Length: 546
Image 1 (cartoon, helix red, strand yellow):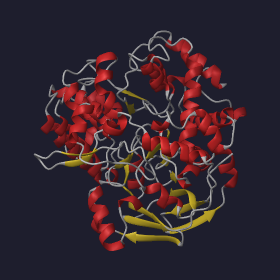
Image 2 (cartoon, helix red, strand yellow):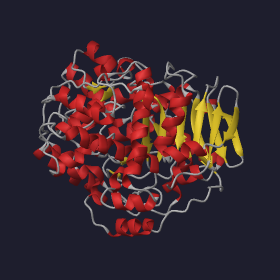
Image 3 (tube, helix red, strand yellow):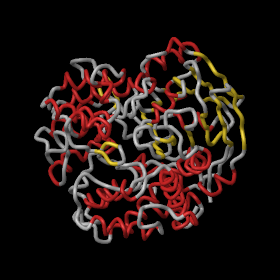
Image 4 (cartoon, helix red, strand yellow):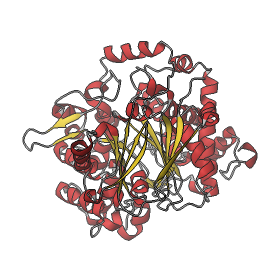
């Protein structure tokens, strides 16, 4: 089976030293990306680690496709114990980092310990340098890039950076790369910030050779020639369809449709798009560089989830206001979903829906933990009681836009996900939106969900973009990785199972696989899901399987 090549680099921030070791056995079994990082995290992070303590570890990892010429491969993985959920969390980001990362000769980089002063860590194929950067304390993401560009000749595509939110340990702070691309959910920016690292750079010319089959060029050619709506409007292209036919969570999940969806949806975003945007090696080009001529505001996005979180969920119906929220989150290093939903919870508590000026002020306060921002920086799960609102989170992670009250398989997915309310943990929502699965009810869906979670985990190990499904089909995945589809799904299954086992050791079980709303026959479907996976009915993994 095709798998990543390269070593594991361990960066010890306490001792200011680095060491390299081979991990061929891990890569043989888990391919790369999320799978490899999950295996290492499971075996190396103490089960009782404080997510913001020195004993937690943070992994950045690539897969074999990051050394291809294929579209949909400009992505990387990050894995750690989440300060938001308390469980293991993997997230990935696009942009241009991945090719610079593999040129260091490493397939995984692991950060351990913590620094007693703010650092920039420079990783090349010749070694690791630790640079004290006290002048960057409190700097925004783009200001950090400017400093590294001016003094080191590095650019945004070389960097993984935490903004002020990460330094202040906001529980949903992001790792940012290429200035506007986020390792978004779960607060891994706070993990790196707690370790005293402002930014990490990657550069070199030592990528190990990986032979990727010629089918990569078929995918690349079709991606270049396609005329999908998503190439013009990104994920916002479905906003009005979802609002009209399913549900667009509105005013902190109290309503199912938003009367101003057309003002923040795909056409509105496309109207602000001023150039083409893409990721490394990708001819598909679905990114959204946007600009408002009247105010001069420039950002990238917003994508659909941000449109929901800072638009409909907050009761804000002006695309420029949503663009501003998006830009602030990028600069401060904040997950737009968790931040927008948490801000919306505050708007609900104060009866301030639609107050865009207050929204922007709250984002700033969250990033620096000022005033009420200190409470909101903890996220909905920890703040909802004091706010007096419903807890719209699962396992501590704020809900995404795809409403499990309407597409029930996605609701089950939110409950079973080891990451909490993560719409990317499985691919089942697409099957319900398309009509391949009846959106209502859970009959027959547990087995489908298991396969869908496994498929997503494998793609995150490969690593291939989630938006590639029409081009990187199961048959093409088999050809690319020189393996049967069942063998690919088995890699995903092992990854999901290790995540679940790690979380079990931290106290997670069936009682955590819950939702803040009822679904028909939910408990029976949950038991069936565990049965299909071969797990215990209490949601734990038998030790014999590890």
